[in-house]
Amino acid sequence: MSGASMSGLLFIIAAPSGAGKTTLVRRLVDRTPNLVLSISCTTRLPRPGEVDGRDYHFMDEARFESLQEAGDFLEWAKVYGYHYGTSRRVIAAEWAAGRDVLLEIDWQGAAQARAIFPQSIGIFILPPSLEALSERLRGRGTDDAEVIERRLLAAREEIRHVDDFDYVIMNADLETAYAQLASVVAASRLTLSCQRRRHPEYFEFSSL
Image 1 (cartoon, rainbow, N blue to C red):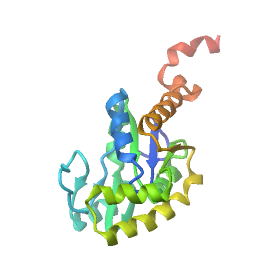
Image 2: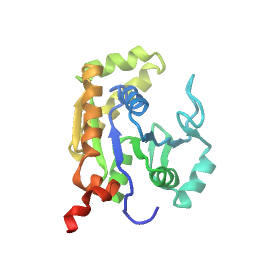
Image 3: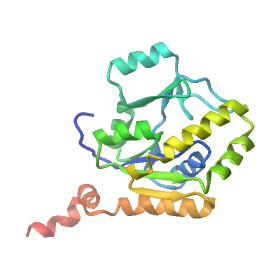
């Protein structure tokens, strides 16, 4: 994958931790043909129930740094003391197979990816309030109080970057939020440029 050309659509979804992004993304990918989630690389340890290659590509710092130095990452960031990155080769392979790609990343990664691919579609998921976000994080039961407080501070910083995105979805109700997210994907696939690229035979009359 070279330059900033895109042979498929690239959806970039960001949200503060606890906003429901992962639930929405997984449902969207499960129900949308030819849409795949790019699996990020990370140096953090797997959480209970997470599987290498399905949730993340887990690796140590040395391996991550080696890929980073080789220019393999479209974007990368250090979050909560761990590195996360998106492989350029994975995206290129999915586009070559005729599939659109979805990135589930934070605002730092989104900024890097959109600088390279300004045609990408940015979607931000907002929680109904910071109070609701706090309740969701505490309800997970996976982090201690100190980690939760750090995540809430990071959430405020994440939300400050909402203006960098094309679409904003308020996740107060999961079904409503999912319907809106699916609508964004469907509409993006119907733009003139996308239809021309994917179905050139239907536009032959325009050159007559």
